[in-house]
Image 1 (tube, each protein chain N blue to C red):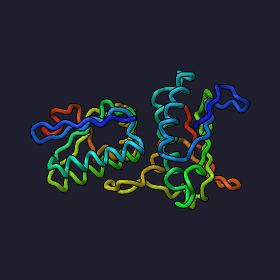
Image 2 (tube, each protein chain N blue to C red):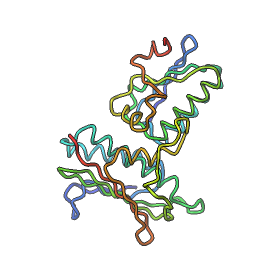
Image 3 (cartoon, rainbow over the protein chains, first blue to last red):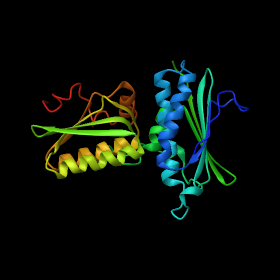
Image 4 (cartoon, one colour):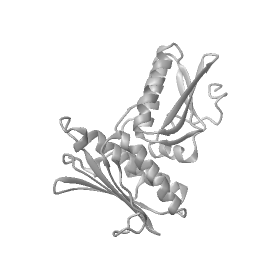
Length: 149
Length: 110
């Protein structure tokens, strides 16, 4: 299961989770982020929701697209680290899946009758900055929300 | 983490998702909407008043239901989203396609 540490750990992270890269883990992350807002109740509801939306979309994307079908579930792991400062909310998500062949600058919202393909576009719309890099044998996403209110 | 209540009255089905409409819940919503339409009801209101979260999968399930309902001669309408859930519709430009109604009972009046 997941592991969490209180605020002010060695890296100043508000949340640090090591969890299965699977859709079923999303509720766990959602619960843990709710606890983060209890400790940081000065973060506005609008900022929380933008950030939560983007985190869920990137985690969902990793769970659905980062692994070859032959990689068994127990081998699919990701790490989520969240930091909260007076100015911004930042999440880094790293996974042990295959490299993402994607240019974020070309991501657009699909046609209105499309039933999928909105995840990354929604994350980009919710965030102030989204970066992806391949680092060693891991994918690493960095999500930033500048606090607005 | 979600409850999907369905009631049908005078040919209109009302679906109430209670909780988070995320990737896991979206699969359930898709199935519920498909079952309603297969069962012969093509006018559907999804009451979002108690939906605390919506992601792109949940949005996709709503759009899938909308398309199926229209193909069956009906429509799917959403009602009473919270301001937070509404931001997902506006950020994806889906607020024009799934225009939120203020009231469940009158969602099909106009």
